[in-house]
Image (cartoon, rainbow over all chains, first blue to last red; front, side, top):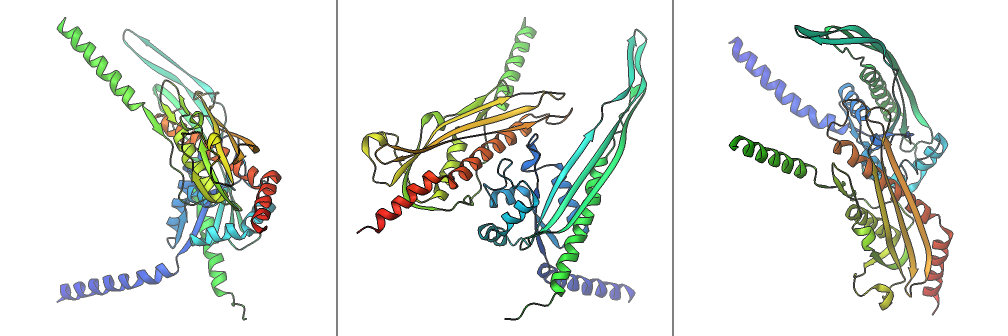
Length: 224
Length: 206
C-alpha cells in the first residue's frame, strides 16, 4: 500500500514539475556579456575566454532563470562599434552607445534586457626560491622550494539596455600564492585566484540581475 | 636494412601527418547580421583585387587564408554601406567598361602578417592592413581608406599547446578590428557623405 502511495506521489511531483517549466520560462531574463573596456595590449579574449566562461557558468548556477548571450554574439550584433579600436573609451561613451536606436534595436531583437560589462585579469609575480635537480648512476631527484604571488582583480558593471548609467557595479579581488615544493619530485600547487574571484563576481552579478529585474517587475507602469 | 627502410617509411608517414595537420586553415566566417552603418542610397559595384582575394599568411606551422575571409566580411560591409551592391566580374576590368552603377568600391590590398612569439617574454602578433577605394564609375577616385589592426597575446607556459587555438582567433580579431576601423572611418567621412549628397541631388533633378 505504501509503495502505491509513493508511486502516486512521484507521479504527482513529476506532473507538477512539468507544469512549473512554462512558468519559469516566462520569467527568463536574457543578458549579454561583454569584455569592456578591452585591454588593447592583449586582445585574444575579445571573442571568448576563461573569465567569460567562468562568469557565465556561475551566473547560470546561481540564477538559472538568467540566460547569457556570449560576447561574440554581442560584438557581432553591435559590429563595428565594440571592437578593440572602436570601443567606447569611457562610461559616458558606453552609455551614449547604448542610447543609440539602432544599438537598442539590435540588442532588443535578441531579447536582451541587460549587458554585463566585465574587465580585469590576473597578475602573476616572478617565481622566488629555487629548486635543484640532479641525477647520478644510482638515480636522481630534486630538492628545493619555489613560490610566487598571484592577484586577480575583476570588475563588472550591469547595464540596463534602456538605461543611461550602470544599474550596479561589482568587483572581486583575490590573492594567493602558488608553491612548488620539491623533495625528489617537484609538486606544483597552483593558486586558483581567478576562479575564486570569478565565482564571487558571478554570484554578485547574478544577484544584481535578479534584484534589478524584480524591482522593474514591481515598479508601477506609467499610464498613457 | 629492412628495419631501416621501415623506419624511413614511419618517418615519412609522420611528416605527412604533421603537414596535413598543419595545412591551410580558414578564419571563422562573419556573423549573419549586417554591420551597423548609416546606409547610403547608391547602387555600387564591388570589386576585389586578386592581391586582396588571395592574401594569406604562412609560417612553418600553418597557412591562414586571410583573403577569402576578408572578402566575405567586406562583401557584408559593402552591403551594409549601400542600398544596392553589384558584384563586378574580374574580366573585363571594370575600368574599361564603365559599369552601370553610381560608383565602384574596391578592396585593393590585404596585407597580413603573423609574428610568432614564445611563452616567456615575446607575444604572438597577428596584423593586417587593408586599402579600400571608392571610385566614380569612370574610374575617378572619390576616396581611399587604409585601415590596419593587430592582435597581440603573450602565451603562458602550457597555454595554446595547439598554436592554432590562439593564432586563429588572433587573426580573426585583427581582421574584424581593421574592418571595423574602415567602417567607422567611412561612416564619418565627409568626402563619402558629399558624394552621397551629390547622388541624391542628381536623382531629384528632373
